[in-house]
Structure formats: C-alpha cells, structure tokens
Length: 353
Image 1 (cartoon, rainbow, N blue to C red):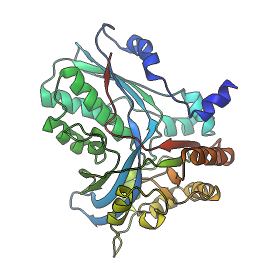
Image 2: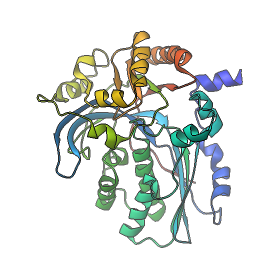
Image 3: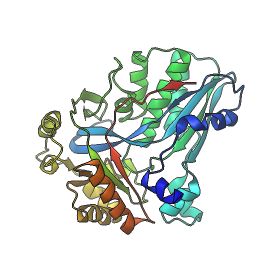
Image 4: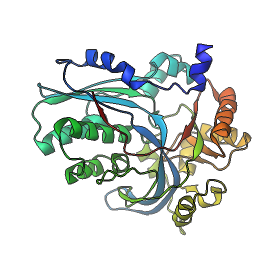
C-alpha cells in the first residue's frame, strides 16, 4: 500500500525533513545557515532553429515553461576554500535504476553518473560566483537528483541557477546584481531562464531567442497539466544540434505565445514544433515508441522537449494527466520514468534555515 501511495505521488520529496541529514553530510560546523531550494525542470512547447552562429551555437526561437518535476539543492558556506558537491538520486539510485530497467554495470554508470567536479554546472556556477564577488572560503552543496540528465528538461541548468541564488542569499548579494545574470548566460543557454527576472517577479513561461539567453516573459494565464516520459536514454545536446537542419521557412512562436496569453490550453498542437525531434529520433529510436505510447492514451499534442530524450503531452486536466501517466507507466516501466506534472514558476524559492 505504501509503495502504491509513493508511486501515485510521483516520489514527492519533503525537503525540510532532510535538513538534519544535509547538515551531517556537510564538512564544517553544522550550526551555520543552510540555503535550500527545489530546482524545477522545464518543457519546450516550441523550439525552432533560425540560423547557425559563428560561435558554434544556433539562433533559436523557443517557448519554455517550468514544471514541478524538481531536484533538491542545499548550500552552505565553508571556511576552507573550494567547492564540495555531494550528489545522489532521490529517492535512491537502486529505485531509479529499477524503474529504468537497469541492472548495473556500465549501463548504470553511463546513465546515472552524477559528476561532482567541474563537469557539473553547479560547480562551474559557484566557481564563477566566488571569483566574481571575491568570496572568502568555499561552499558545500548537497544535490538530490530527480530530473533525468540528457533528457532535454534543463535539470543541470536549473541546478546551476538555484546554486547561484542560494549563494547570493548566503553572501547577501542582491539578486538583482547584473553579475548574476552574466554568470548565468555564460555557463549555459537555459540558466538565465531558471535564474528568473532581476526584479524578482515570478515567471510562468518565457520566449527565449538568441541562443536562448534573451528572455521575454509570457503572461501564462492558465496552468498546464502534462505527462512526461523519459525513455532512459541520455542524449548529448551538442550531438543532436550537430545533426539538425535549418528550415528554409522557419516557424514563429508568436501564435503560440498569443494563445497561451489568451488562456488557451487545448488545440495548441498546430502551433507547436520542435525542430530537434528528427535528429533526436535518429540517435534514440525509442523516442518514437514513447511518443506513440503517449498518443495512444488520447493525449495531444505529443512532442520531444529540448534536445531530448524526454517526451511530453499536454492533458486536459490534472486528473486526465494522472490517468494517462498511469496508462503509459503500465506499458513503459520498467524501462522509462513517467510522471504527471503541472506548470509552476521560476525562480525557485530559496529558504534559509
């Protein structure tokens, strides 16, 4: 019964309850303040490629919404220099591995390895923060991963943005400091979206242009209920982009933006596109199976998010998304992680305790 309840609750993680464990993990005096937050994932409702840039990136037009599939992150300052990251999957690596149908060995290492050094965007963000603001000492970070890596859901970028906000709170740096926005844009195209607007206003959706760092808030007037399915395949964003083609007649997200601002939640399919879907399918054929499984539940539209490999569909209501998620889960797990989600806001709230 307990397992069923957990399964229906999508493994919600009561973060305040783990603060004592977090403090035990950290390497210095446990009486110091700890900043905690829950970095959300994102979905790309629209992603069009406009041109290749000389710097190797692409000019894009994309519409992103944050959703309540979240990691957990805690941060505290240390007297000693350096950055220490303690990362693991929540609720546990064995549980996630079973849901993905992974027994162990190289498959487990390749799919679920979480770097704790400079390969982790959190490490890069905090390194830049220390250098930029001339911070004395270092940081300890405990990162609980729930958002799959290589899924196109922005988990690493969201973690990095949340680490910057936590560090700013601990060091009493104003969140409106332009240096934070500059750091975010430098370390990842999606990071500014998760960092949030410098004036502190919550964002429920945004249109991103340039390479993804130029943001215009969308006044999303309705909450979207969605089903996300991650097929247990990590895709490299760089490799997917390398195989993409620029359309001779790129679509614009303007029509979708207008529909979202008008409160429309159904009939959005004709306004949605992801130009990375075809190259992603070539690298991960199982994406087709996942999309078909979503479509078979009656959900429309069904689409890849980001560079993949996660796919999503928009449901008509919370109950519809939960029922559909259970149906997809019955056919795809083990071998995939399927969740019902709702749109939320960025930036994620930071608590000091």
